[in-house]
Length: 94
Image 1 (cartoon, rainbow, N blue to C red):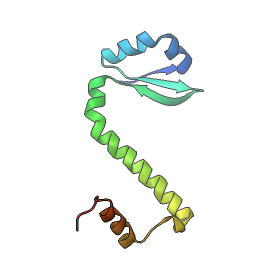
Image 2: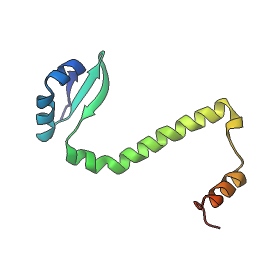
Image 3: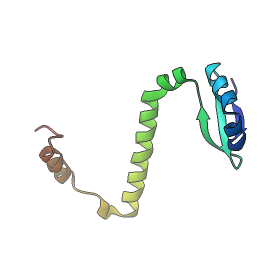
Image 4: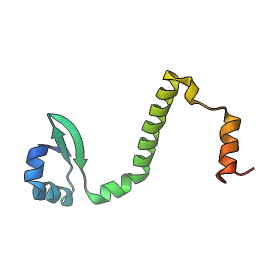
């Protein structure tokens, strides 16, 4: 199924239509200035995607942290220091 595309202004005006489409099992891509910004999907699809969504977000955050470290390696800490801090906080056994 191809997702419907809708400008944010129109989606705001026709919000009931966007929600009705989701209830019917359809996706609606909301665009701002011609660029995809968000997607309204059926709730059951969202629930099915939660674990994968967490993984995607964690991967994005890891990539951001890695890029920051590449730009400034002084942001990093030695592994033994990180482990010691986690033990102090009770977040690591051993």
